[in-house]
Length: 99
Image (tube, one colour):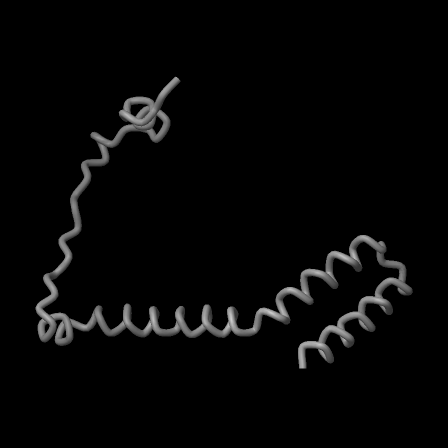
Protein backbone atom coordinates (compact mmCIF):
# COMPACT_ATOMS: atom_id res chain seq x y z
CA UNK A 1 0.00 0.00 0.00
CA UNK A 2 2.70 2.60 0.84
CA UNK A 3 4.36 1.89 -2.52
CA UNK A 4 1.12 2.64 -4.37
CA UNK A 5 0.63 5.86 -2.41
CA UNK A 6 4.21 6.96 -3.10
CA UNK A 7 3.76 6.31 -6.82
CA UNK A 8 0.54 8.33 -6.80
CA UNK A 9 2.28 11.16 -4.95
CA UNK A 10 5.16 11.07 -7.45
CA UNK A 11 2.75 11.26 -10.41
CA UNK A 12 0.94 14.17 -8.77
CA UNK A 13 4.18 16.01 -8.13
CA UNK A 14 5.38 15.42 -11.68
CA UNK A 15 2.15 17.03 -12.84
CA UNK A 16 2.86 19.91 -10.43
CA UNK A 17 6.34 20.25 -11.94
CA UNK A 18 4.92 20.40 -15.45
CA UNK A 19 2.44 23.04 -14.25
CA UNK A 20 5.32 25.38 -13.46
CA UNK A 21 6.23 24.58 -9.86
CA UNK A 22 9.87 24.84 -8.83
CA UNK A 23 11.74 21.51 -9.00
CA UNK A 24 13.10 21.93 -5.47
CA UNK A 25 9.59 22.51 -4.13
CA UNK A 26 8.41 19.35 -5.82
CA UNK A 27 11.28 17.33 -4.31
CA UNK A 28 10.61 18.68 -0.81
CA UNK A 29 6.90 17.88 -1.08
CA UNK A 30 7.62 14.38 -2.33
CA UNK A 31 10.13 13.60 0.40
CA UNK A 32 7.97 14.98 3.19
CA UNK A 33 4.84 13.20 1.99
CA UNK A 34 6.73 9.95 1.47
CA UNK A 35 8.04 10.08 5.03
CA UNK A 36 4.66 10.87 6.55
CA UNK A 37 2.80 8.25 4.52
CA UNK A 38 5.25 5.56 5.55
CA UNK A 39 4.95 6.43 9.23
CA UNK A 40 1.35 5.25 9.53
CA UNK A 41 2.02 3.27 12.69
CA UNK A 42 3.54 6.26 14.45
CA UNK A 43 0.66 8.51 13.42
CA UNK A 44 -1.87 5.91 14.58
CA UNK A 45 -0.10 5.65 17.95
CA UNK A 46 0.03 9.44 18.30
CA UNK A 47 -3.67 9.79 17.48
CA UNK A 48 -4.79 7.05 19.89
CA UNK A 49 -2.53 8.37 22.66
CA UNK A 50 -4.08 11.84 22.32
CA UNK A 51 -7.61 10.43 22.28
CA UNK A 52 -6.99 8.41 25.45
CA UNK A 53 -5.42 11.45 27.14
CA UNK A 54 -8.39 13.63 26.26
CA UNK A 55 -10.88 11.05 27.54
CA UNK A 56 -8.89 10.67 30.76
CA UNK A 57 -8.78 14.45 31.30
CA UNK A 58 -12.54 14.76 30.74
CA UNK A 59 -13.39 11.93 33.14
CA UNK A 60 -11.04 13.18 35.86
CA UNK A 61 -12.82 16.54 35.88
CA UNK A 62 -16.10 14.89 36.94
CA UNK A 63 -16.52 15.45 40.72
CA UNK A 64 -18.03 11.99 41.42
CA UNK A 65 -15.10 10.22 39.78
CA UNK A 66 -12.63 12.41 41.67
CA UNK A 67 -14.35 11.53 44.95
CA UNK A 68 -14.45 7.79 44.13
CA UNK A 69 -10.71 7.80 43.36
CA UNK A 70 -9.88 10.04 46.37
CA UNK A 71 -8.31 12.71 44.18
CA UNK A 72 -8.06 16.00 46.10
CA UNK A 73 -9.57 19.16 44.67
CA UNK A 74 -6.99 21.40 43.02
CA UNK A 75 -6.59 24.76 44.73
CA UNK A 76 -5.72 27.65 42.47
CA UNK A 77 -2.96 29.82 43.83
CA UNK A 78 -3.74 33.47 44.12
CA UNK A 79 -1.13 35.82 42.67
CA UNK A 80 -1.30 39.48 43.52
CA UNK A 81 -1.12 41.35 40.18
CA UNK A 82 0.62 44.29 41.87
CA UNK A 83 3.43 42.04 43.17
CA UNK A 84 4.00 40.37 39.82
CA UNK A 85 7.34 41.30 38.25
CA UNK A 86 7.98 41.79 34.54
CA UNK A 87 9.17 38.63 32.82
CA UNK A 88 12.67 39.84 31.91
CA UNK A 89 13.29 41.21 35.40
CA UNK A 90 12.22 37.92 37.03
CA UNK A 91 14.60 35.98 34.76
CA UNK A 92 17.51 38.27 35.58
CA UNK A 93 16.84 37.84 39.31
CA UNK A 94 16.63 34.07 39.10
CA UNK A 95 19.53 31.88 40.22
CA UNK A 96 19.84 30.24 36.80
CA UNK A 97 20.54 33.44 34.90
CA UNK A 98 24.25 33.82 34.20
CA UNK A 99 25.82 36.74 32.35
